[in-house]
Each structure stands twice: as C-alpha cells, then as structure tokens.
Image (tube, one colour):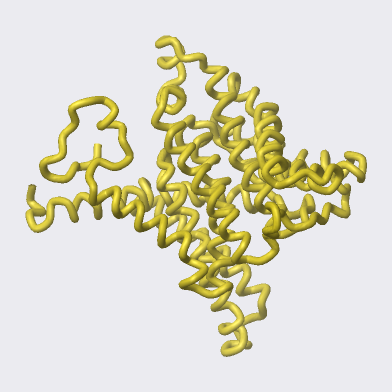
Length: 354
C-alpha cells in the first residue's frame, strides 16, 4: 500500500478506491493530460512519431501485463495477436470500406478470438509448456495469413489501406494520427486500470498466486485463465488496428516472435503486475531503441574499422538484452517500484526517517 499524504484518510470504500485523493493529485493528472495532448505544439514531427509508436506498443504491452503480470499466464505470442487485429482491421477497411471506429474494435475482437483459441490449453498446462503453446501461435499465425484467400488478408503480398477519416478530418500525418492514437491509448489504459482493480482483476491475481487455492475459494479457473488471454489479445488487436492505420500497410512479416519477446522484456523492466509498470517499461525500451538508432550511424561514420551497420544492429540487441538482465538482477520489481519509492520519499520529505 502506498503511503498517503499527511491528513488524508478514507471514510468509504469509494474514496479508498479512487484514482486521486487530493486536489493536488487531480490537478497534476489534469496538467499531465493537457501536456500530453499539447505535445505536437511543443515538439517536432520526429518526437511525435516516436510517441505514436510508443503509444501503440504500450497498448499491446498493457494487454500482455494483464495476461502475464496479473493472471500469471506466460504469453510469447502477443505479436501474433497484434497481427491478427491488424489484418482484421485492414481487411474490413479495404474490402468493405468501413470506418476506423468500426474496424479498430473489430481488430480487437479478432485478436481476442485468436487469444481464446490459444488460451484454452492454459487450463491444463502452465509455465514452460504454456510458453511453448503461445510460441506455436506465433508460428501458426503467418501460415494462417498466407493460406487464406488473397482477397481476405492479402496473402503473401499483404494489404495496403487508405488513411483513417472522421468526417472531413483525415488522419494521414504523424500529427493528426497522434490525436487518434493517444486518444485510444488513454481510453484503453483507463479501462485496464479499472479491470485490474475490480472483481476480474482480483480473481486473476488469485489465479496467478495459487490457482489451486483460488479454485477452492470458488474462482472459476478455466473462465479467468481464458478471459485473461482474451483481454490481453484484445488489447493487442486494438494496437494492431492502430498499427495498420499508422503504417497503412500490413504484412505477416511485421509481427514476429522477436517483438513478442521484447514485449515481455518491457513488462520485466517496468515491473510485473502493474499497468503503470507496463507503460514505464515501454517508454524505457522504446526510448533506448531510439537513442541507439540515432547513435548507430554516428558510430559507423566515426569508427568504420569497428564494423558496419550489421554489427551495430546486433550491438543494439545486446545492449537492450543487457538492460533487461540488469533490471532482473538489481531491480526485479521494475521501474514501477522505483517510482513508488520516489513518490513516498517526496511525501515524507524532509523526514526520511519516518
């Protein structure tokens, strides 16, 4: 339980479960949202493009956090679920000319259906064997896309789609897409906070901690394990739909096991079992990737004898993997734990001995 500001106490369950407890917290939250939506005015297109990509990935990682961090179901196929959402969204947009406010939720539904299919075995298996099952989803997904009729998912060629439109507004630039992506991300993250704080979230935590004890207490293990996969895959599908409109092209080779592994790394860095941790982990890894991407050409130009771009690309993966290992060793509870410590220290300053 986080340390509360001095003089704050609860007189009802509703006030205890509120997101904010003081007017200062509400003011800070409002200021942060205003700052978030004002980013295009403050920063250039390059920064906005980075924020767009981080926001899309954060939705998928938040979904993975619900499946793995809260329900304890290992999932190494999140990228496949994201790909299914992208292809469903693109297919509906191309073949039926449906608007984005229909195709993106449909992409989430498509991801959820695929997640349920591969989440059903979670009732019988766990740990390493469940991880193998979700990897199978990652392997089977491109085969499904390739062997479906080309008119449905584009086959090996993929699908190109027109930009999203809302009335006279066309989301065809990084700036315009920013408002669409950020709006969806804020809604999905808000829903995630509510899911994990409610009855569903408490049941998932019980299943994660001890599924046998949870079943004895009356928790339907099969329902909640399957639901965890469905919700996590739905988030991935929503992210895939946004990806489709952001890139405006989807292909099976865009959603590989490589990305699924990095999504797991993001929740490790941010902190398992925390929605905020998933967001912090995404920002950290994506920020590190962008820094290394900028530095790589500079290093190749100034130190050509060391190696070409291929070597620096491999070095990028080594640095990212090393960062995850360091977090596992020195801060296994992730960035969210560091944030909670910093927040508590701020609240008890200048009396750190309390």
